[in-house]
Image (cartoon, rainbow over all chains, first blue to last red; front, top):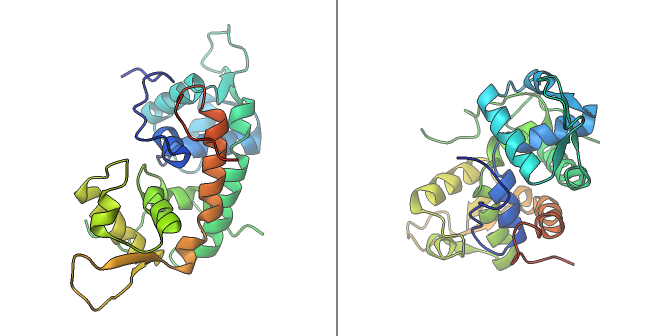
Length: 120
Length: 120
């Protein structure tokens, strides 16, 4: 199914639920993380992240994030597979979400994940 | 597969990735949301939320959240299906994540979801 911002099946009017309708998976926020940390990244570079996202999941998530205007191509008219993606203002605005998630996990998951990096 | 805090397949040492390893789905944070908003809730009450979680997903998520010590039964020795769940300190510490998600969504998804509630 083609992902567009218009065909999302919103479960409720709750903004938390709506955020999870589009970002509630194990991968979308990792793409946002990589673009926050590294700046613009190509498809190939995004595949190299330590979590090893699969090509079909990466393509699907890039499509949805683009439709939601959270990321955009650096050179939208170029056709190269090495064209890079960057965050829009809306995508960059997810930084507080990632900071809160990372801070929480470093504190509350360390009991279960002995090698987890703890954020100061 | 039985969910325990010990058998999670952590994808990396990144705390954001680790948070998504356990909470990266469309439902877990909604259970946390309901317990933050309403206080202790029974299984039946959690089923009544507007997003209409299914019984099998709810049972699975309650199991994982309990194993991760993010929620606990109010009366752990009682066997009643109406026994309530409440947040632990670790679960309550997810409040900043939910606040950040909700604030972001109210601002950046309203273009796609005309009825979304905007948080002040």
